[in-house]
Image 1 (cartoon, one colour):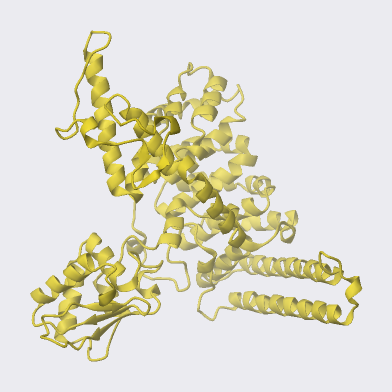
Image 2 (tube, helix red, strand yellow):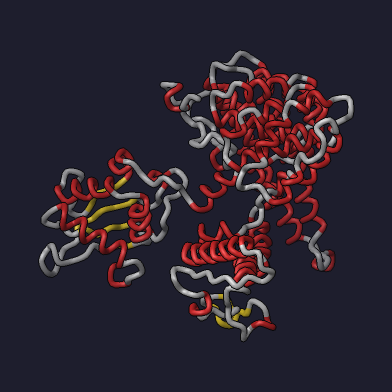
Length: 563
């Protein structure tokens, strides 16, 4: 499978950095002077002008009218202005769609097609149902399918398939038009010969949408084998999308189509061995292979792929609370060891003695409260009971519930409610789990040597050629991932960089010279996290600088005198 960067020697300006389903903020037109971008900017200006006009009109009407005409729920003029705004917005979107369709239907150079497809994806991300008529969808479908088959430019393929996915989101009837114009065979073809992983992932997203409304067409086009043949190439979240497509198709599976399904049975059986599947999947293919209807029913009941591992479990705690998660995993190992020894004993009530690191569970002096929160009692009636080898399993279950489920349910619901007021949660479906994590938490990979030279500012006594700066850059390149995170936490207040890496850090990371009151090797580095400033003394050697810097970023976290 080729790497996207090695496959093409030229980079296209204006494309999103991450070519998977991405944020609406990344849908910006190219900086080129292509005429395809002009309709978008002019339409936005017209839309803003319409909104300003209607707002000022409604404001003047309210000021001139009598107060008695206003009800407790607002004025009629205000309601009319809102309706006018949405009507203008719908008309503006329709005009933009027509211009994009007209331009895509003509012979346009590749850079123009990329700009138009980017604009189309942005429009589809935020338009309303009324903005996109069935006639318009029918007109777009053959154009997008043609571009999705364009093997000469993978970026055009990716954006065309993404637009197909968004069409299905905006207008569910789009699936029928897309099927009529052979979209499903085109998507299956991309999946059966994977060359670019991001294109393949977008194909899976599109097929999952289409399979909801057109399962039979997907089945007849070989979509089941297309989504399952290379399922091991994808991350767990993408694998769930693939299996959701199979579930959607199997819901409408008829008795006349066993051969089309039976080819996929060995792959589905192999999926039962995956560690991240829930216990209920053990019933996936227990029925006779000849009983296709029963098999499809079991797939719907057990795969239930959209919900596979949506709940956190014991094995997820370590990702956000390493100490507690590790302890609970060790406790679970003790429980399993105890059960294993009991199964070896032939007596009815064997007395086994299992220890944790040569220590009895009773000697740990654990009670049924949440560690660190003595007022949080896991089970009221057992508040005075100590944890021992025989109730350890119950303790683990209650701890997992308190940490990942009922114990945080109210907080999670409050967060979802508040988040939904700012940005509707349902719109987050366009993102994968990895993309959401990057948008909300920042980048996993922090920097490389080129980033350090291009995106760090040196000021107040330092230049890029200053010996202390040369030493610092070498030290930063030698940092492992944990040291990079600690350095970022110390300097910026966050352990990750925003999406885009050092280039997106605002203000820029700045290194300035620190004037020492004592000897130059006596002071520690200090920071101004609000300005992303690192005040670095001109240490006498690289070794001294590394020692002082590591001490500051590991032991000085949260030390007020260093900030």
